[in-house]
Image 1 (spheres, rainbow, N blue to C red):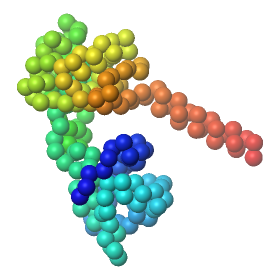
Image 2: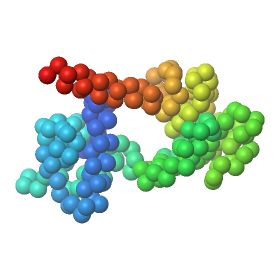
Image 3: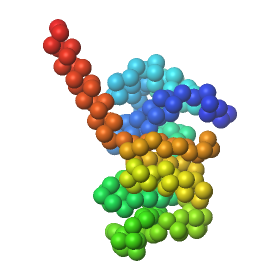
Length: 218
């Protein structure tokens, strides 16, 4: 199958792939063997046309008279997302958020293995946190090369996030997930995604407030 050109695929379509995968896995747990684009769309509040359009960016996966075979589509979507293999991931930041991420049990099931944890605090370096021994930032490069780590998670205070990102990029990291409540910049060849919990709550608060305002005006 010819590989799609990434620059031609809208970012929202890529993000929805993860939603499709999660929902398909839920259908599989319920022993559903086939699913239609309408059923998949309705389960996520999307139209069947949107589902078909999103998947069409990556190939043709449906079968006439059947729809999509759940197992088959799960495999295809995992392959597209790159999670049909295991990715070693590192974490910088062993504070409260970092400890929560270390304790999270869902990484392995999704194709990610937290392989190393780093911190700059002399009070944390060398300490054992669950299965991990906190390493100093000076060991970033050697650990990344030795364990072939390409993905990194930043969970440090805002003032340190850019410096940590720069060190990770210099050490060979190709993709970053930033939990620090600040925007950071990376070179064009490095993928960056940000998770700001306060921003997400603000968006929800806006939607709830707007809903209440609309009801008050009706």
